[in-house]
Length: 133
Image (cartoon, rainbow, N blue to C red; front, side):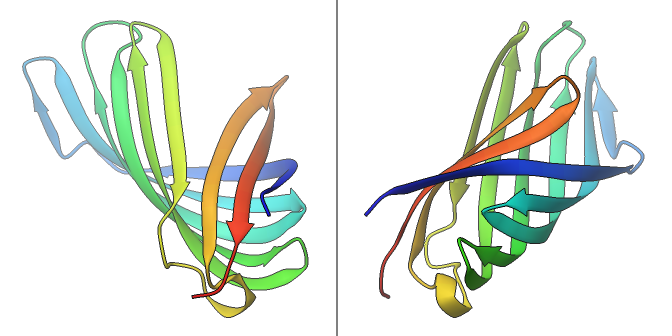
């Protein structure tokens, strides 16, 4: 059965100096620490690598995030993979649960997450299934 849950999260960002810059493209790394509230009561650490271009509104990033806590009352952890692009201001973001990354009561977790920022508040919506291994 597919379920959808939503809630909010707080985020703290730690930037590192760029590790490569050439021809108007800057490659960088960041770490984010999150605290989720709602059906997902958890904390996470995100490790992100980004590419910023010289064209306003064009960039990309990939990130790996380990989320630990409980999802709809089931305890464990899981990993999501982020792939984000900005194409001259047009955003696209995919956040997918890494297959077989669920632990504890979250073994067999599969799904996707969406993030939106509304009036400065970070919100998530997660659609998932939870099956056996």
